[in-house]
Length: 354
Image (cartoon, rainbow, N blue to C red; front, top):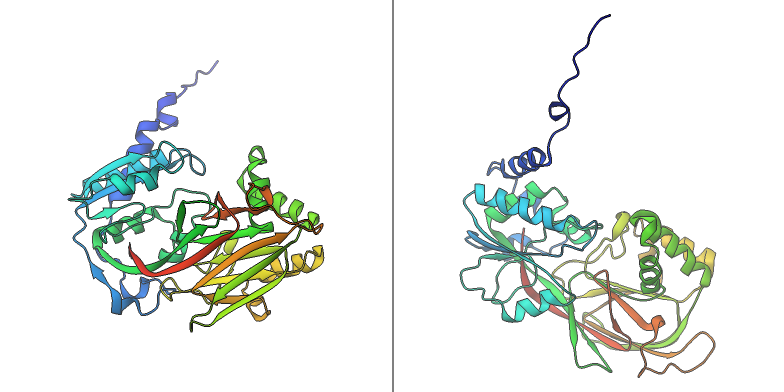
């Protein structure tokens, strides 16, 4: 009877520690020959004319350990070690509760910090390290979600100013800043429904939630006001099923929601959809993938816009003193804020690493 040798299990399967060391080594092993002009974000107007150089030696990383697939904590630690191997000084701060990042940005001491991984004060540049599920802003800005590529950009130290938007609420004292998008109507209801389907997994739950809301076909009568890029004020009152307003061109799954948007054009691109017919909505959503929906008559560029809900689909007046699920807003992928609201673009308000 022949004997056989069984190899040691530790030689077959790499330990978690070994895998982590290899990931850190891969992240930190770069050269400084990253293409420059060819890799500047194409959705920034005249990027070379507005470049700002920062000596990026000291970095603070804010991360949400519960975000997306909950890989943020491991990513933050790996990024910290990779940057330190390239002689950068790094601090990491876990976010502990909703609104913690905003709170930190009002009290955190930024003295001696060159780059921060969230909002900014005093023109400290921001960088987005992709560790979420969609990562649409990182894809828009860098054309990639490869972390090593973005770490090279941090060390390179060039940044440009981009717009953000300020959202205020008619019945609340607080306000919110956004850099990506704001959704109302069916668009925000999809996120509400998807939150109840987390057991399905990220990809299928959003598709399923969208199908559920499309078949419901709810509409709201609303007064919508806007200010055009030229400063002309306009308003319209009608029944709407969806409002999608984007600061960036793209969304998850490669949708080109706002193909004409630029990160520093001083505008937010607003898409208003009146129909609630299943087949019409399916046709519109299909057009989102190639951007041909912009040929339709419900896409506006605005410096400011507001939505004031008036009546529900049954014609009953909406009590805007009460929180209603139908009026909840999806702001940068989170459910926060209630219509009525006003959204105002703040031109070139923050610096982002490019």
